[in-house]
Amino acid sequence: MDAYAVIETGGKQYRVKEGDRLKVELLDGDAGKNIAIQRVLAISDGKELKIGAPEVEGAEVTLEVVEHIRGKKVISFKKKRRKGYSRKVGHRQELTVVKVAKVG
Image (cartoon, rainbow, N blue to C red; front, side, top):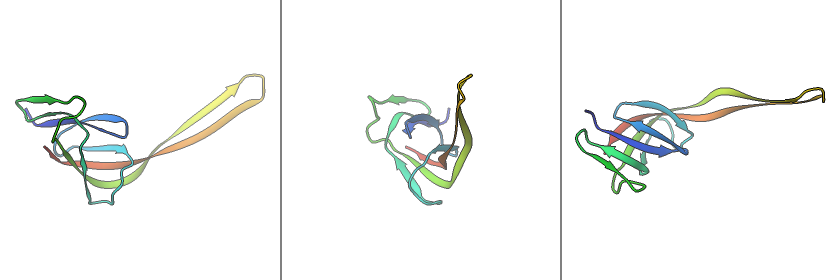
């Protein structure tokens, strides 16, 4: 079994292993730079699983920033029938595509 970790970033939790690419909430850093995530909730080396309370002490996951993108457009539409009321608002979330460089 491969080494993996459960990290938290942007208020969401992700199960990651080396080489994974994922889209997370916008992070600071230019493309090509590395970011260290200390908020590691659980980590496994393939044999043993360590679960933090709430974080694992000394654990760190290194992410490489690939690019910054914008997500799909989400439409919020409200309407009240027979009242002539309608509101339409669109939103595109800023995302960062990262590659997991090191779990440890």
